[in-house]
Length: 336
Image (cartoon, rainbow, N blue to C red; front, side, top):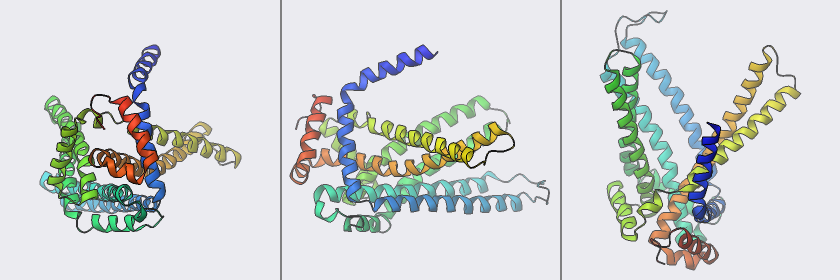
């Protein structure tokens, strides 16, 4: 098994090796834009706090509602089964709000990177006009588009959770419910993938959600870059960075626990717990920051397809590196 996985890894590295410079240049441009507007980081971490607070509030509301609807006693014994018509709206509200908070950050990053692309003088400080204006647009002018795109994903995600709960309850029809859950998972992935590109146009140009989706797909079809956007190596790199930082912080947490005599009782269990806590904290904090970079990478790809000349004018060194890398990776599709 180990030999097979090693061979598969080597084969994958061989396939994507020529496209590594392409991913590196996209990452370089995206990180340059983010570093010039580091005010995006507090915004992302504040959204993480909002998500956590919303999750706690929703959980309290959900449990209380189920308790009352099920006519439960103090020991948790319920006389009635809560109706699906009650559970589904609650599930939908959770996923919809979660998606909206996440996509507000995505649209804000897209708007900020777009400003850095076209008018770099307005996006060159921690609290630049680009960060403030992009965030204000995302929670006012573009908020309806964000809610619409987020609702589509939330409906599918809530339905998938309902189907999973039915399947796990063992009430029969397991194979059909399993197929339904699989189809809903695929539909969710498709919608999320579509949204990440459509929201770039919402953030950069302020288009309504439906028009943004049409425009971004039409742009890539016109350029012949449909394959390019399905082969974004940067997301894999960012995931590996998050996992790597999580491992490091887990080891640091483990070392601190041992050095301070905080490991007692079941030594193996206590050590695993300290490592796990450090790993989770490091991974979550890094993933939040990497989400900004990922949104910036998507924006760079869209902006380069839409306005390469502006990039050459405002960021000539990055533009030259980008052009060379794209020609190397995609000699047929790239024609600049």
